[in-house]
Image (tube, rainbow, N blue to C red; front, side, top):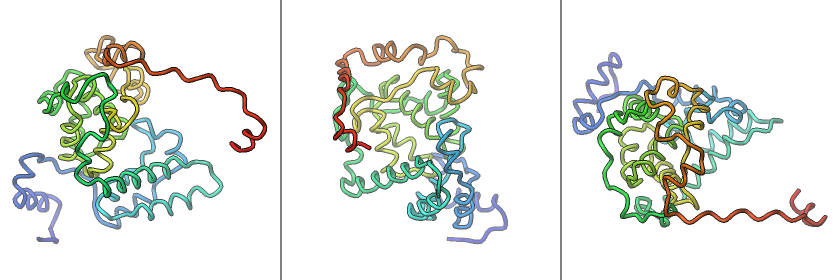
Length: 281
C-alpha cells in the first residue's frame, strides 16, 4: 500500500478507491490524526484530575486516547505510567480505573472469543431474548427518530467515528430498552463507525446496558441527559416536555420493564463492631 501522499485529500481518495466496500458502508473520514507522535501528544495533554471531576459531561475532560489504544499506538502500560506520574500526591484514580476495566474486558475476550457476541447472562428486564428485534431500524441509523439528542449522537457516530462514553450509554439504552432491539445489532452498528471500536469494550459495554452482563438494565431520564449535556439538545428539541425519556426513574422503570420483578430493597446496615471497623479502614 502507498504510504506517501501529497495531502489528506489524496489519502482519502486512495482509501476510497482501495476499500470500496467499506466506503459504501461509511464514507465519512474523521479528522483524528494518526501515528505515534499524535498519540504521545494526546497523552501529554491528558488531565487526570479534571477527568476525575467532569468526565461525565459531554464537554468534560475526556482523554480521547481510546483510538490510539485500540490500534496499538499506546499501550495500557504507557497510559498508566503517564497518568500515575501526573497523579503524584493527588487523589484522582478514575482514569486508572477505566484502564483496569479495559484490561479486564480484553482478558475476558481472550478467554471467551466469539462468545462475546452471545448473551453472557439472561436479560434482567422481564423480557426474553426473543422479545427483542434482530435489526437496527433505519430511523435510528439515519438519525431521524425526532429525538434531538439521539439523532445528534447517531450523526456524530457516523460523521466523526467517535462518541463520548455517556452518549454511547444513552444511545445504547435507547436502542435496547426504548426500541427493544437486540444489543448485538447496536454493537455491530458501533463497530462499523467507531475509530476506537473493538469487540471487547464495545460488546461488553452493550451487554452491561442490556443487563446480559449486569444485574440490572441501564436506563436514564431526560433530566440526566439535560444535566450532562448542559441542555444542549433539550432546549431545542421539539419533543421537550413529552419525549421518550420524560419522567422519574420509578415511572420509567415501570413503563420500560412492566414484567420485571421488583428489585429487593437493601437491608438496613447494622452497626459494626470495633473489630469490623478496623478491618474496613
